[in-house]
Image 1 (tube, each protein chain N blue to C red):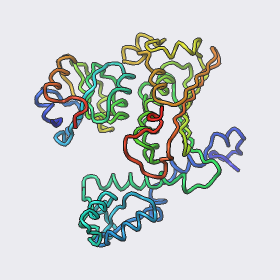
Image 2 (tube, each protein chain N blue to C red; image 1 turned 120 degrees about the horizontal axis):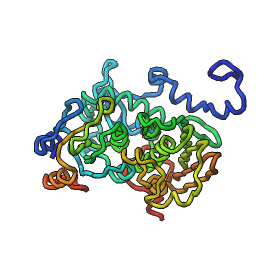
Image 3 (tube, rainbow over the protein chains, first blue to last red; image 1 turned 30 degrees about the horizontal axis):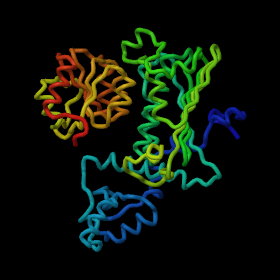
Length: 285
Length: 116
């Protein structure tokens, strides 16, 4: 087996290269869309579209006419038709035609379709999707970039919007901490499994002398310059703790710091669309 | 109350590319210059009122899907920040007035959290 650069890969390399990660980012839309995407035509009866949605467990289809996108039909549109007992109607009577959004929608829908079925399509005893980002120390111009990639990835995977938001706040704080406080930057890592999301940030210094004090609201070691930018309010770890289900900070001065946070996912939202604001964990606590 | 009317009523300067501001309806607002607080406190569709004008405010607005950032007291973002905001579809607005006054005027216009 050979790595990306042609040299034989070591165990360490093998650990770092994650096949699923490569799949999700290296594949082009056109490589997969013809087989992956289910579509409807304008004259198709709604009852038939409903079958397509049900069989494929999807919540909507693009409507194509001679290869051109002319609309989108979602489950909601079908529900509207059902209320009027009108399932014999054609797709064109109930589809949404929003010309401005069509191109973006199509591309995003394809990406989401593909990603949201990842955990169903790949069978293993334990499937984990690992996203890894190298964060440079002091590089404020890239601040938030990894977090925004993580947000997009989670939404494409079909994650609940509330869970995505909690995850986003936590990884943004972790990303900025790597930029603001580390000597040589670090690695931000997201591991997605159907039942939980694990976020971690690791660096090789300078290390935190007191790992309890950093959880006190308002405690910060940021420089005056960084504070003027609105960072270093001493709310970073406080925010993170509030957003996640478990948080574990280990550090050794001169060696580095590792932060591991987990969010547990109720009802496995990946692969199935769930909207709504409910956060089962929050409700049960 | 759409964003275009807010821009007119508060006499705000649009720093980013012109857009269809009439179709943007802010759902509320959040005011702070501390970025961690904004991450945790501002919600999708909110206006963010701040003195901060550096590049990182764009990332915060994008992550939170904010309706626009109103930069107060004539703080000026640099060209790179404006360009990044344009790339990410973030609306940057500017005013000479202080944050407190902008908050008050927005409240008077009915931009209050929790409304739809």
